Image (cartoon, rainbow, N blue to C red; front, top):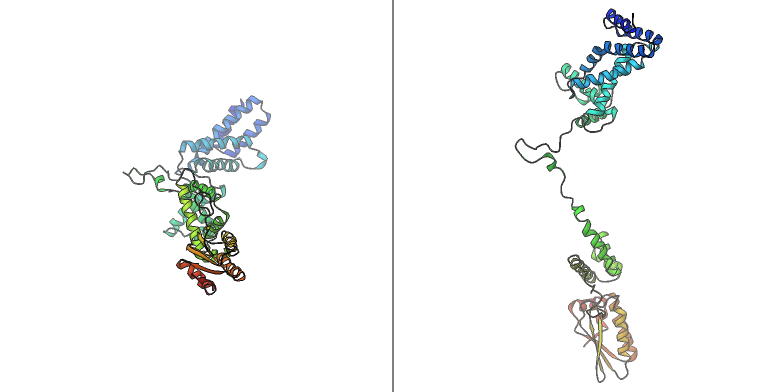
Length: 379
C-alpha cells in the first residue's frame, strides 16, 4: 500500500482523530522518500482542513470575511504540520495554538485602522468578550471596575483598551456630516493657524528691529517682551516716563510705516531732515545780549551738545547776559536738567546773567519738580 493510502486509511479509521493521524504521519514520514514526504504532508493537511475551518468560524462577526479567515487558518495549519514534533506532545493542542495565533496576528496587523500595541489589542478583545459575558449575567452593562476585576487588570488598563478599540475602524474624514449635507467630517477639524500666518510678519519685524538704534530696541524689548511698564523703563534708563512714551510711539510708528513699505524709510527719531542732529542749538547776539535758541528734545543723547553750547555762550567775550530760549523744546529729562544746572553755575562764576524763556508746560513742570526753577531765572 502506498504512503498516501496509509495516511488516508488512518484518517478514515480515526474519524478525524488528529493526534492519531499526526502520529501516523510522523512515523511514515521518518522512513519515506522526499517525494513520499510531500505526498504525506498534503494528505495530512487535507485531512485537517475541517478542523482549521471550525477554528476560523470562531472569529466570525469581527468585520472580516469568513473566506479570508479560513485562508489564514489554513496557513496556520500548514505551519503546524511542518513544525510538528511528536516528542513535544499533542498535535491537536499545538495546532490550536498555531492557528489561533495566525488568526489573532491577522486581526492585529491587517484589520486595525490605527496602529495599536499588541498588548492593548489583545486586551481590547478580552474586554469585549468579558463585557458580553457580564452583560448576560448581570442583565446590564458592566462597570469598568467589574471588567477589571474579571480580567485581573487595573481599571486604567481597561479604559485604555476601550479607548483603543475606536482605532479598529476609525471614521473616515471624507464621511458626510449629515445624510444630505455636502460638508464632510474633515471640514470640521482644524482651523486657521494665526501663528503660521504671522511667520512672515515676525521675520520682517525682526529684520526691521535691527535698523533701530540700540536704545529704542532695548525699550521695545523691555516693553513687549519683558512686559515692563513705561515707569519701570524710565527708571532703568534714567529718563522720564513721558520721554519713554514719546520714544516708543516714534519707534512703533516707524515700524508700522516700514511694514507697509517696500523700502524701509529712514529712521528720523534721532536725526532731523538733512542729516543734522534732532536737537539744534543756534545763537544770536545783539550787543552784549546772546540768545541761545534750542530746538528739539534735551535728553541723554543730546545733553552734551547743549552743555557745550551753553558753556561757549557764557564764556563769549563782551556778553553780559544769556537768554536760553526753550519754546521749541518739548522735553527735558534728567540729563537736560543737569546741563541747565551746570550752565547756571558756569554763568555765576563768569558773572553772566542767565535766564530761560518760552518754556512749555511740561518742561516748566520738570524744572519745578527738579528744583531748578528756584535758581534758574525766567526772562
